[in-house]
Image 1: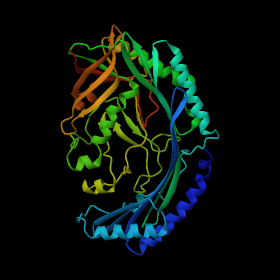
Image 2: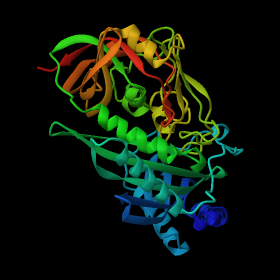
Image 3: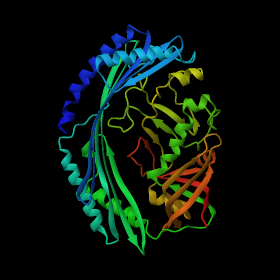
Image 4: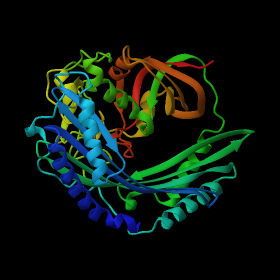
Length: 447
């Protein structure tokens, strides 16, 4: 990964180019935002120990928003020559003459901007060559294939490594940047029994290679998960308690993140549009957002508009406390941006009793554990929820058999309020970190 070692030098070059771009832009327009982004990386796919594909990425982009008389123009380019940047600025300014007038358009207030940058320890150059991790994949695959005679095939594995330079500047005088890395391993294998096959996968994601799974963990986990699905069947249609396993429990809060996004709120395209400062979860549940976690997968020092990010309570004692606002949606709602141009950061969902996963299963006693979700059957306007799932059936607090080809349904408002407990098996491979969730009751559609 020698090319990664030059990333700091390239950051300095691109910062200088960004500064030059602001000088050019000021000659054409009074209010503007400039973003330069560069991504360098590798993706390698192997199967049965042989490299099938290997791709190298070296992409960069320049984009500019301009604001003129409450009209907006936008243009972007992948060619960062000065002449091309000049042309891109010209096209954005010209376009602003033809777009709709909107008094809510404009730059965030100066006091909200990231005037001082902070180091969140997001950049970690691996001192080990890419080939090392290709060997890790090969070893993981070999471990999985040899773990059980019922593991009969491999879908292969992937290693990804990316370094990203983020630079932002605007006409108010801010110019900030940060660099980050992202590494991941993925392996999928196929199990067979009684002429029926099942596949599953395991993966690992981190800012640093030293935090990735070992070959043994990756291989055994992918094999075990495939084996556990063998013999799956439908169950009868019924109402039952449900556990969302920690691997997929974050999905319940991803829906929340979308539903409280300012874009949906000001257009009333969410059933939560009138729910600010109202109870939507049990009173013991809190959601803390912290953008400044060191090495965090969801960490950012500033948002896509240069606004400084802050630790905040999204939900406190079950009560919704924040919309997720960029400058435009904040203006639409007569509020102030809270630094969410570009999405959410690290979310932490607390548990009630600090119980482990097995205790949560015993607490449910009889019901369904959901481990995989299919489709996206969620209605943002009504909250109606319906998704295909796979998982395991539980009786008397013990897992009995795997299930598949079933659908679970309810309403998100009811689901959130009927959360009984959350176990402490926190899934850390996601920006939303949460344990397994026990829901009081949902409808299962089977046979």
